[in-house]
Image 1 (spheres, rainbow, N blue to C red):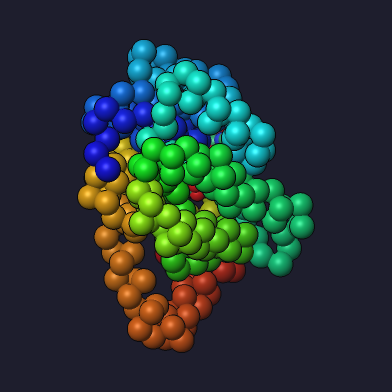
Image 2 (cartoon, protein in one colour):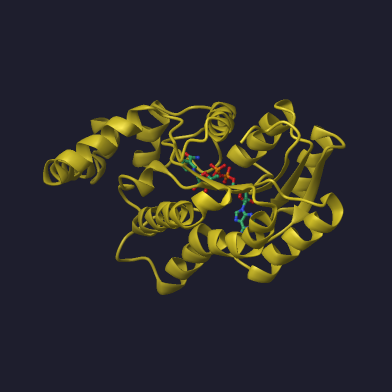
Length: 264
Ligand SMILES: NC(=O)c1ccc[n+]([C@@H]2O[C@H](COP(=O)([O-])OP(=O)(O)OC[C@H]3O[C@@H](n4cnc5c(N)ncnc54)[C@H](O)[C@@H]3O)[C@@H](O)[C@H]2O)c1
């Protein structure tokens, strides 16, 4: 789908990749961009910077009623939603020590938000015979993230849901894309975490990630990889799962323990 003249909703648009997505979409000729974020003031500030073709909306993507209200209000004001980008996401460090509450919270934000968005907007897109759903997952959804079980699991689920949507609605005029970046220079990368410091070495700017997303949408790609190396890692995993796991185990060992920093 071409971005020119399209109406776009972007969640998590007050900062990071979402904020850059909004500005890249407008630069490509989007007719209007709705910046949805739980951070009302942050979204309003970005909308002001972007001008009259951008509006801010306060929305907690983990709340189905908030997502429904976002879609209803946008339809009321703009008449149509061409592209819905489910980009808001959070991370949580840890493994077996993560509490059930932490698992539930990240599940709601990283996965159920995508279900809520599709439930709210797919009927409208089917009626028009056209629409595009984009989900910002992560390379952790194709591979894994060392040190974070909830992030790895929810990003796999994010990708799985996008895949299912594409199979289900691809022949009904709905384009689906899933974005799987490695490190992107946003607040999500935490300098105190050795894994994130390692990711930072190959990281790209939020603007570069957003540009890759928009180009991927226009090229009608399902899997959008702002870091092309991820495709090679994914191929290696598919062709030799056990060998790939042994490599990841070595990497995990490198990041663990008191000397982690010196080893990177
Ligand atoms: N930064 C990276 O290295 C990286 C890599 C791969 C994937 N991603 C994914 O990209 C997406 C965007 O991440 P980012 O790096 O821009 O993060 P970020 O922390 O810079 O921005 C996230 C935005 O989402 C908003 N948000 C958080 N919870 C929300 C909620 N419940 N409802 C609505 N908005 C909410 C925040 O207020 C913030 O504005 C996420 O899904 C993340 O998992 C990021």
